Length: 302
Image (cartoon, rainbow, N blue to C red):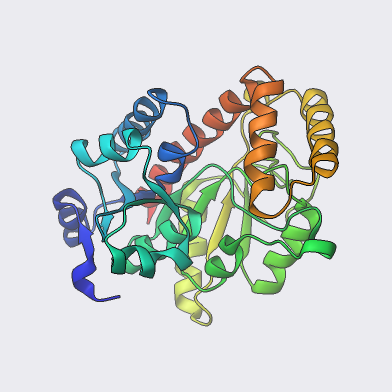
């Protein structure tokens, strides 16, 4: 991608030049993950949380065939309010730029563009991963391979709990993507504080995360990402029994209705929100807010 296609907002460019803390944010949660008009309020809230933590927000999106790192008020409103905005993964970036399309960036596209801009820290909700029916469908998120090839630190609440968490962790190990549990010895479960799966390494301060990042740079080698797995607070998690029951029912309905491929994830997430009366959405937002606050501290500690 030619450098002229990557547009940095004045605030982001100034922060890069001055070596001030910057945190990237995805735009898919704004365009496709939240109902309108709450999506715009949340987008503004997340940027404000970063600023209050001493970091510059760099929300990423593609507008009219140009990749933007850092959005102004009008651009943020456009991403939140335009129903024609597409969902763009890493593989979609070239066609979107070539055809003049507009789209919100997923984890893979955001990580790629942020790293290309020189941004090292990225905050999101949950990563994609290996789907539960992988043996039959071999369905795996593009997030995983992209993170194996991109030197960026991703602060997240684990992977989406509708996925096969043990298989995803195994895949991340195979790909050489490092995982740090932040204040926890168990990998978070997105809506849940814990997935029940252990992590090999636990850190407890932003400075410790920054030290691991520095050691990555000193060692060199493959430019893999570092995942900082930050659990949603226990008092803000979705009730585990409700989560497990609703997910089991939704998975069963998927099989009965023959829902497969890319339709599975939005269906399951939609059913979780509907059948929990919106509690899953609130747990998701609690996780995102915590990740954004932590990401600002990590960026400032570097």
